[in-house]
Each structure stands twice: as structure tokens, then as C-alpha cells.
Image (cartoon, rainbow, N blue to C red; front, side, top):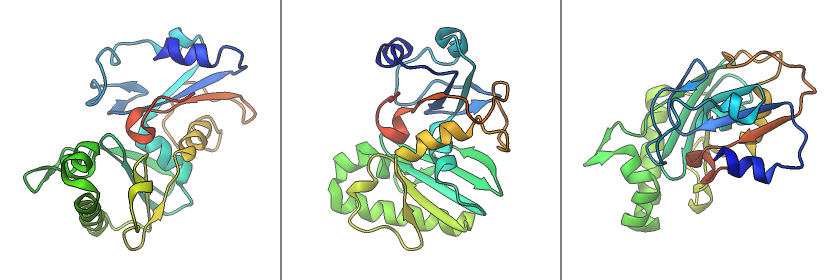
Length: 210
């Protein structure tokens, strides 16, 4: 992934790197291998590989951060799996709701890409609506954003939710380095004018993008 991104960004000028990782992150480092990608991420030194200060955050949390308008936000990302995060008064809390039990499997089994392919769009849309309503009832957000690459496959959004955009993940990547951010940081604070390269994980954007 790093070699591919560096090739794409070979003529770019940037001071720092933000990575949206499709899995749990603690103290700025992945703590488990991703469910839908190859292995080798947990022990990898991304800052050394990029030769830049690097901040790593869960990819759903990165898109949530870019979508945030205040209050209590629930973000759900429909992609290869189901990304999830909450932001409460500016504090980001990545969540791993995808593999919680649901029907005869997990949430991800029904609303992820595999569920879409197995059940077809019509049933998949019904499952998405049901999952969103259940999670909204449990978590009581002020604002709910449905993002990820498959949000465009919904004919209508669940009530009291709004559509996200994968581009918001880029904004979230920049916000990681803002001095006013309340996020726990994986790298030193830089000035607001810092040029940042954002790398988005697969479950939020269905492909790593520089």
C-alpha cells in the first residue's frame, strides 16, 4: 500500500500523512489485522515508510470527523463491511459494531458488500434501514450520517439521517492535524497550514486513495 501511494504521490509536496485504517486503532497504531485486507499492518512503521509524521485513525472515524457538524454524531459506512464511529462534543470514538450478532449472522453479513451480493439490492436496502433504525434507537444521536461507497445504492435514506461523502474522509484527514482538534494524536501537532496526504482505508472508501 505504501509503495503504491508513494508512486501516485511522487510529485506531491506534503509534510504529514493521515491514514484511515479499516480496523481498531489504539494510541495511533493498528491493534488487529484488518478483516477484509491482507495481513502485516499491525507491526508496520508507517511514519518511517513515508518519512513523514503519520497519524492513523479508524477509517470510519476519519470520515465521521470530516462529516461532523457538532453535537452527537453517529456515522455508519456502507462498503466492503460496515464502518462505525461516534463523535460526542468533538470527541471521536471509533466503534466495531460490524461483527455484533444480527439475525443469523452479524450486521456486516447483512449490510456489507457480501450481504448486498447475496440478498440483492431490494432486501439489502431493507436490512440497511433496519440496522440503522436499531442503532439510532440504541445510541440516540443528534445527527446520523450514512457514508461509504455503497450509500449511493440506497433508493432512500433511513429517516432522520443524511448521506455522507467519501470526500469527507479527506477533510477528516486534514482535521487530524488541526491545533483545535480534541482527538488523541498519534504524532506531534503541526500548524494549520501543513500540507497533508490522506490515505483512506477500504471499508470507508472501497480502495486506498491518496
